[in-house]
Image (cartoon, rainbow, N blue to C red; front, top):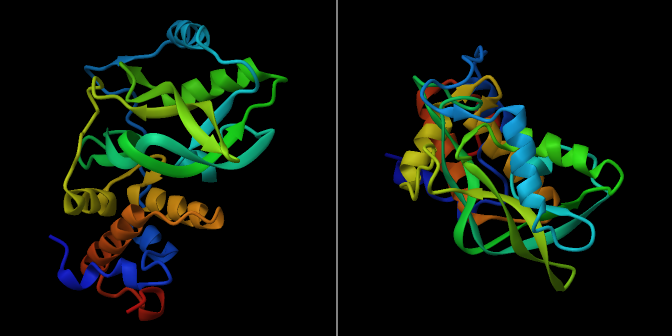
Length: 247
């Protein structure tokens, strides 16, 4: 349980979570490979899935709504980037991670957008030149197991004063890795501990908030989480320098 004095993110103008916290949580993890018992995409699966998805493609350039790591670690060089709001979706750490940013022994959580509310992010526009290759790369980065936990959909976004469809990788309740609506303290505990060969949940949270702030986007949900995660790490590592751990 996170102590009450840690629940003060709304009163802070700077993040409590720092790169020092990230370094403490990081471990060098060897990828254990595909998770036993789960069906994984093959190259043929990816090609068939993408072809079926594009059958409903709207007219015009394709945009990808980005709300997390695609902002700070893009899968492709976008032709344009714009602020955008996803209508009917909200950020949620609702995907179990037993690989990538967690392990079978210490599973983490990945962030997605789930049904309900709104979510501010950016839309990255795919260059028409090489578009299909870009989408192939994106499909392979975002989806691993079947049915996919990161489920691609055409969603409605608002950008530059108008509504338009865009691709978004969303929560999928049919996925074996879907975690649903979890208690905030439980999410914080898992993010503060889990690490995989891609890095830790702490790093993911830190980098996402930092990238959003650069875009002028402040997400209270993530700011509350970073406060809780930082406190949990400080409790485990009391030697963390005061200068790196704001009071």
